[in-house]
Image (cartoon, rainbow, N blue to C red; front, side, top):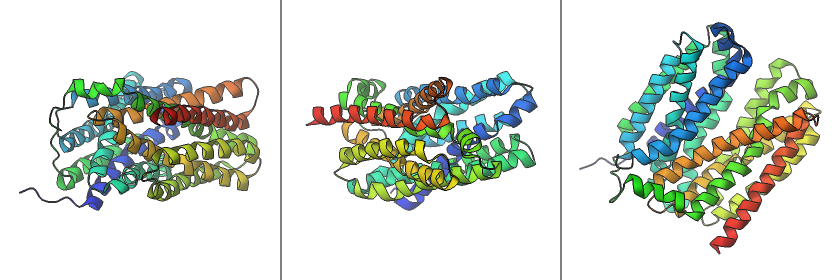
Length: 384
């Protein structure tokens, strides 16, 4: 007889994986000057390592979801974290820039599939009205990484070397694999599961529109986040020591949003998503006016962070509309967010390059939120 799984223990195990992934994803940006100097490359060239990771996420999420359709979810999660541990561990040993690029790409491959499958497992252990909260718990590991993991990795990189940060991520990944093996339930693949069944998600209008909402609407947050450090130093005029504290406040805003918003979303997923997009549009527009003082920009980024609850809301919506293509739809949600992570900074960078200033990223972000709201309106109309 299979032993029962305690939801809190499973959610904790899955959140540890989110913490490991979040730490390596965001800390790589803060460690860029150190590994660029060590490997003898320029900062722009080192930035390609970050792009290689993002490319791995975008390609790996759908590919792994389709190819693993007949695997039990626990087995898949363990395998993904073992690959993540292997790739990050070797990243800490790389002798050259080329090997760094290859290993960052491999590190990104499990990212989207892990979060997608982890949220499906987390949601399966709770009543229907708590699914959004369960998905938020998994994402909370990533949020904690932005508050604790990233500053710690940066400090570690300064104190004893950037390579150790990736080694610690590898250890956390192995810990996740162990915890998942101990606590997660064995969930065999659904009857009739196959790669073709998963690919059915790509023909589902509701799935595609939900993904589009995230890919566009979430781009505004990344437009501001990417250029936040430069804005704080060049526009707000704060000391470098204050920059990590503002990023931590951003993470605290996201954590508050993940803890509060999903509690009220059951039965109102689309309405909640719509209000969050409106929230983004307003708070991102106000950010443009708040950059002049440390107190106002800190309050502003906390408010923007609250909108991060859009992630589990859209993830839960996908569970409702994906039918039998649950794994691919869930994994694609994280490809969509990485598309947002590319779109927001790209458009923000264009605005800055054309002389509108760093504060203009807030206007760009607000525009993306409104574009996401337009897609949401189309999805709502078609649903009705």
